[in-house]
Image 1 (cartoon, rainbow, N blue to C red):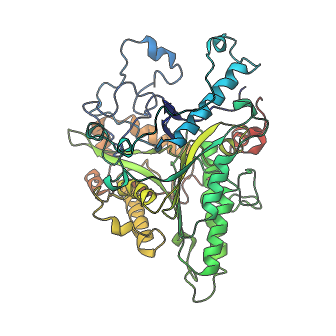
Image 2: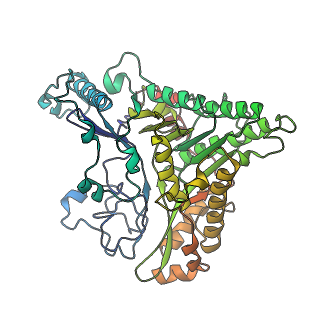
Length: 504
């Protein structure tokens, strides 16, 4: 069984322009920042929806090949009433030398497949793969005017998908980073620049750390994972407590993933203590550090929840017939923002598979702001949507300084209010009294079996969903807390022990 994956997600054109991020070129991954549930004109979610819980039988889920053989591609008969599965992803558009590095990465991998002595599929395809010259030359240097986005392109982009006009002509320092090893590119020594970028950026944080990640499985000096991203965060929290200065940590994760044992380890890393020795989560460890705060200092007497927030995303939407519904926005993005100065965008999750180099191949970019506000603008474009703020930036003052009490309270109040609202209206969305995955699965399945009319009847004052602010929802600290790890193989696949071998 092949236990690693080519996990890089990128497009490079003419060695001059590249797009790098977490978005797979696969079914049901396209979405807009608004994350609509309903799409009467199929303008956002055209075609088949393989993984929507709404599609009975999910006919293509186990056999994607069947999709290409069927004449009728769209299995969702009525997108005006059938909810989509919203998907949150982030990518970065690179030009110039950084794009050339992305091209070099592709060439290196391409050449390795051509030369690899192990032909996994035995189909002879590699014999028809042409050689690509390694030497990178630009045909011409793009002029400053070529950096701008023309009006026609601008109109095609969705709201929230383009930087502020003042940012378009600005330039940043950028470095392409990777996870790559012997099996994926023939490297004698694995490259872990993606991991080093995360640790380096976090280790320099003074004011705040913001993270979006599909997985968050890391180590703080004890435990099974070998990557130390969580420990790097903890050390920055310790320094802020010792110096008595404001410092905040914001994390956005999905409520669940396809493999529940993996989600278990994300919760254990962030907000739920394990039963064994040394299995305290990041939130609890921050709580221990806060007890050492000097009397009269900024952090004296404060709780860990006043420093760190863990949230997820949900979307509330109304059909043309007036029926309200809610759906989880699946967080698939892999983003780190530090102090409005540094951003990392790529394909690497926070787990050993993505970070050790000799397991999954990964590609990303670390971006340093040159003082032009590019990274800040990027954060604000995410937060406006999540917090339900005006997209024109008129309320940006509410979240201008992430380290301050006022910004953290704005974030936390929105997340808490939305959690209470969903808990009041629905019975199947995350809450503290859903403590096992089997319980959550049963509640979801019962809801999905209902007709649209029965769903409305099962809700408590569904019209209140109109008052939901943005998409941010606090991750309930006891949600699925009694769910025990069930799969040693799944655990190992996300940590060092299985990541170090190419075959099992």
